Length: 430
Ligand SMILES: *Cc1c(COP(=O)(O)O)cnc(C)c1O
Image (cartoon, rainbow, N blue to C red; front, side):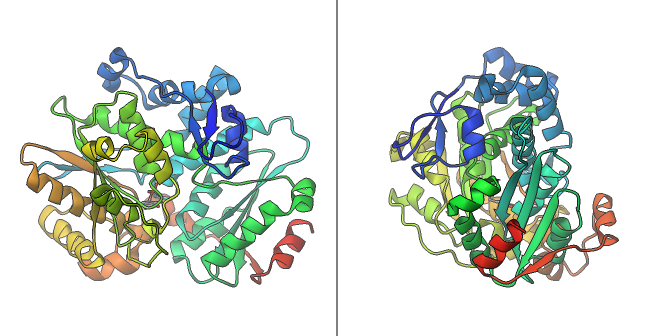
């Protein structure tokens, strides 16, 4: 498989090059030159396959010859070695729980796959490669856990001091080994700015090779298709489902649309957005107007200019009519998100996190207008990650899953850094 740049100024590359580079030299996102088709036999026998098998079958055409079969099978098996249950929540509504991985958010799958691919590609390199990433919360934890202990790879995460939740901070700062957390005395934009400056610094990258773990990387984007196949393994052989996706950067949703283009029988998709709804607005009006991000309670979706939207347009050859047949956009306010968390807990005894709640609300609206349809939402994070939002709504504390209790006993290790490039550069070349 070759990948071309959506800016069309750089030459096509294979999976290895696209994964190591992240972004094309012309600044464009990479896009696969052909969309593989799932065989009818594979789709009919989905429930009989193991998750590792499905992962290998879906990812192999995208990886091509850049990773041999035995290594890719191991990488796939390790990527999906936790549960993805589709649980019934209300009449005609299920929740696909994507929060049973190590950091309790769906970004684990993409981060685990990408980290293992980069680990494979950096074998035999004499210099270790440094993954440099800025995080506002979830990405850093998923990337750190994905790369923990991977030989030849060092991970440096910049996060804004005092602006990530206590649980997120523990996930970033307690791992040790090849993971270092730099606690920047500034905000997320400062962190992102410092990372961008480092990537542009030719002398630095010569002395210390850098790679990004950005969400636009094909090795993070493509494996997100797997969620939709795992859901269909569990979906009764009835009418194709409506799938509601809480969307920020639109990577997850775009992966679902790609699986559909390969033949996965999904009936309809919903882009569920918070107040940052440039994508949803495009679907309603055919006009795409990115705006500066505004803060909401579903903060992992606070993206004003969704970078993967261009991939969705490419998949549909920029034809708004065809796209809006398959995909509807909804905008959900914080007030409706809060009311949904409270109501679903009271009526259905199911606790949603703010991102899942946005999708639940949008799905309910769609189903009210389509009485014969049924579907599920992607529950992208565990509610315990957002206690300051969820606990006041339900009037009780949320229990930390057993798998995370160990975190509370671990000491925090971070390096305090002023928000200056000289300080970051000095630390990287120390
Ligand atoms: C990142 C994230 C999203 C948004 O996913 P995109 O692929 O950026 O659209 C939704 N929910 C949670 C919990 C996230 O961490």
